[in-house]
Image 1: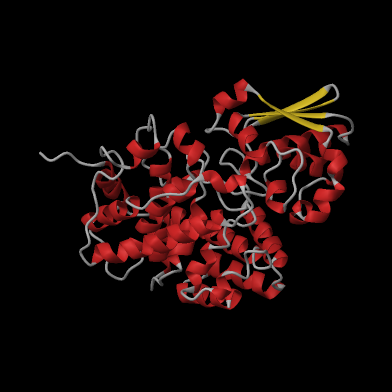
Image 2: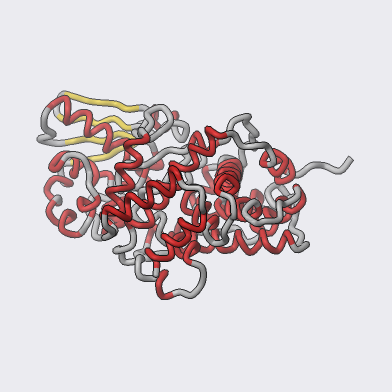
Length: 415
């Protein structure tokens, strides 16, 4: 009997029927992505899609993670939404439920594969890009009028995996490479899905083969699992416009400030190792630096309260220099041990301390439907669109039945 590859097992897993509760969950993630796209329209990157020819849906994939408010899956340490939804609207499914199911399967593939990557992979490779291209290929495969066979899905993932990539070097330089990674994964996913439906074949053992993705990028890849539920339910919503690694510190600081009434004096943040690696930036110079700065995030809470998008802009970076100087950070081994299943932090100010194991927006501390809608409204307003556009986006995402109407709305935003 021929050995079954991991992508063949995953493709079989993806062929399951999707229930209505999961489709409703996908609508919330669609709205969240639309808000993130709209919010980035006035950003430095926002004008770029308008200058590039092609399909507006793909152009949205440039913008979905600009503000660092895109959804996140904790244990795989990646952001499915920007890759999957940008791909979904690169072509146009005729049926809304089929569109949602394509997205759900895309989320599942991204997370299933991303969850197998080890620490070595995450040290150098951008998981959202390396795993995301698989999810984009899967989402696209189920978006065409012609329903894919299991072999089509395996081939699409094999082709996608053969060009998987995305280095973290961008973290060390002021570039928009992170947005390019998302766009590339979304667009390439569509092309390989189309090619597989027309007979193009890809390597079945692209993950575990002797010259496959694991051999090239991992030391000890984790086993792939196939749970009964759809893993889109495990994905977190981000309430604050900063790197997710900064969110536990923000949440803990907010709770400690609520308890004490103020955060005067020195503040110490203890958190997990990756949060220190990504976000120990005591002197941010740019907006992206500020979004990846534990010191700045906590200074915002200390001086201003609940973080707003404006709190990470240049004026706020300059104004909060003294407050940042009061914030120190260090790794806590016990918090690192719980990561990445739990993103936690401990904040100390004076004699008082608060520790949080999970972060607002995680399944254990979920952001409510009303909170997700409120977030979308705030993002759409930040992007310069009026209240009617917010109402339109919310209605189309949560109640609509016509993918073309969302495509038309995106086209108007991005034209």
